[in-house]
Image 1 (cartoon, one colour):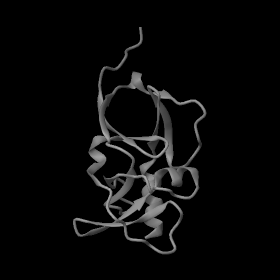
Image 2 (tube, one colour; image 1 turned 30 degrees about the vertical axis):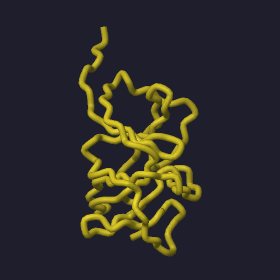
Image 3 (cartoon, helix red, strand yellow; image 1 turned 135 degrees about the horizontal axis):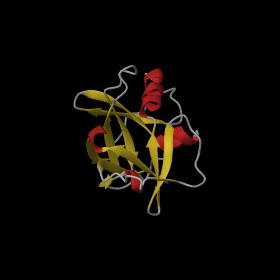
Length: 152
């Protein structure tokens, strides 16, 4: 009989515009009401702007626009999720993503992770999983942060 892991990992499920983002809760620095963002000229479509947070200029990116390689539309975003950078080579300490609701703390184990049908291929995603009726991105944070770093 196969061993089924009962180890649960605390994660945060972040509502994006059309999907969800699944991250370990340790990557979240803070969630704040959506502030007014500063525009940045000559940036890719996924680059929403910048926000001054704790005396740092944070890049704010639209993850769905990055993954789907299309224009960003974050007018309805009501929160800003500030993330700790994990890729030491990219030298990104913190950055932010607009979100469309309150992130939810959940505990998952391996048995809860099921690949979503009809997934999109992207260098910025490891997997897309289905959690109940929700489709969640498991992002490739190294690639995302390297992309941000190239633009700064």
